[in-house]
Length: 333
Image 1 (cartoon, helix red, strand yellow):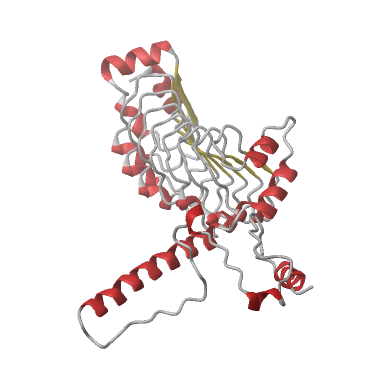
Image 2 (tube, rainbow, N blue to C red):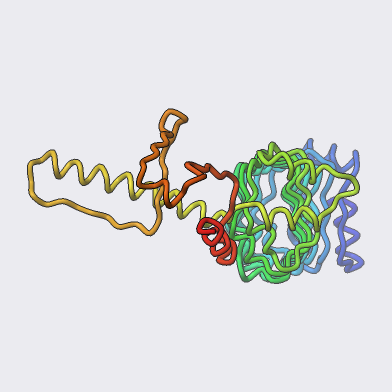
């Protein structure tokens, strides 16, 4: 039995720390001492800076653990028995080689903090049952999309999210469900467009967005200012960025219109009398080129519009009723 483990047993201690070159050497040669999994009274366990690649399923025996620190190891996965640690509040598995967080996280309902940064995560587990979560760090991983599992209305205590240094291309519009969110780091990703919903997070005060290939040059310049002007950035997003849900709905409508057109043509080609007409509440322009723009001026129009023949207006948002009303009134003056 390792000396550290024996001392915990003899003195009925509640903390065990295994770290350093000597521990690393013992683990490399023979693995963890199996007596570790009998320390049911321990509430704090740290195993760090070793070549540990695997944890035994008996980790679930340590049911009194409230803090588990496993950073700077070589772990490739976490055991399913982790879900048995029902009292766990703080988990640090950063600086490992973990590719996926197990679904058993839904059983860890007392969790307050998760640090899984600097791993190989391509996705994260469902955390909606972890209603006490205040901090999540999954930075420096391989996430390609904004983790939808983080956007849950049950996570009312979640204050801080670190998602920087991933490969994310988007921000979920469901971010508005995180009503307690105050800080978020989205820097060093592949985000090109930001949704207006980001500015609608009720308590969000700080959002880091540097080093993203944003298409909006003005927004990018505003983001890069030092010191950061978080309020100005969020105001700009609110005033100039489109709602992601609306964009998705428009895309879906375009798909329906295209499908309806194919269906109608197919019916006509078949020689049948029946035609299918689909009425949409919006016009979707699928494609246009400069050659497609033609202005035809007829004498009958001259009395109505004697001066302006054609006017092309770009980058004008009419999503607010008052703006639309004013725009229409200008045309008849």
